[in-house]
Length: 476
Image (tube, rainbow, N blue to C red; front, side, top):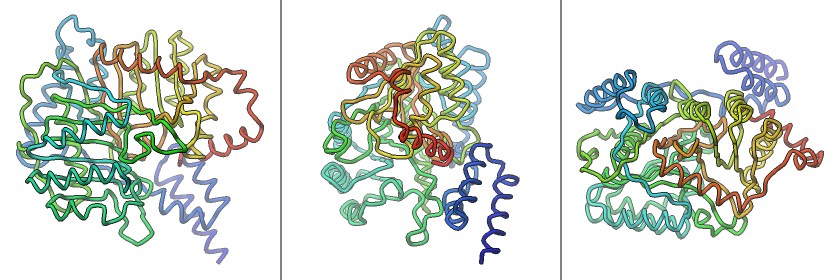
């Protein structure tokens, strides 16, 4: 038995090193697991280590594929020739970033959007439910975590009511993130004619070989005209009703305009991936936007383990590299790879005022201590680190120079960049970016600044937990 286990370990090690061509840090992390826990490591690799087959997300159905391909080619040429934006536009300097997002993530740029920003869960869900109540054609929801609690049941009851009225309702949730959701939760919705589906459900009881790949997106699309994207999941804790976390600080956007259609396309592709029944991307789901008062430029960038590039991470790095004055970042988890760490250090050492805000309390032990293991390097480079103390900080925002911003579902960690299915809104608008920067400054008053002296005085046991967690960070 020992010989068989060792041979399997050697075979698996050869697979990790030579065949899968992972990056070096991930390879060493897996080899460490295999060496110290031969049997358990082998099982963990089978569950957590397999890769998702790459696929192109721009392969749409029917006649719409040609329409979208034409739009992509036209905009790609305009960006290459620097003529997408009017001459003298404040956002002209970001056309190379728009081009990168377009060619790697098929993220069309739209300039006719309106945005409302939510930082409070009660306001966000009141607005979402009001928009759902007014829906005439369809409601599409996609969330990572759905709870069977007061908020979850309120949302489910609204969906069932709209389904009875003849509105098409589709509810996509992540099988792992919502693992405690009882089957009866969707009973009324199904009875009313609505549809629900789990993303990457387990085909074998108690064993999900795709457990490591999670749909972390949080999208809502109503009638193809209104879209929601951001950090709030569906559960009472996101309303600040959890005694442990207290007040929940997050950021979510309500969008009206052309960018909603990109959210819709992403939802449809995720739905078709999760279900056997294919939904044709007909014009019913993609209504032509009416003339809007919106003037905000946006791109919706999606990334995941099935895409060629780490699209959201690349866009973050591009934004950081463009900074001249300020960078403001908020994230609940900070487990960066070397490229992101280098970008932040270079920006700070170049005189850019880099500020990053993290929660002061943990919700995931290993990720929390892995996060703290990186803070010393940032502090040494002059980065300002703030620990949010009023409840739990879950926002995923990045603002550069008060001119461009990103709000979405991706954390600043390796999991979000490589393993999770994510989507972020990249916003090219001074007014919106400055609003988000102001929110950051208001949060600074509710946070404690971490200094190099404070970091140096942390207990020895904390340093030990940081070191162990950091070793595992590539596979957390």
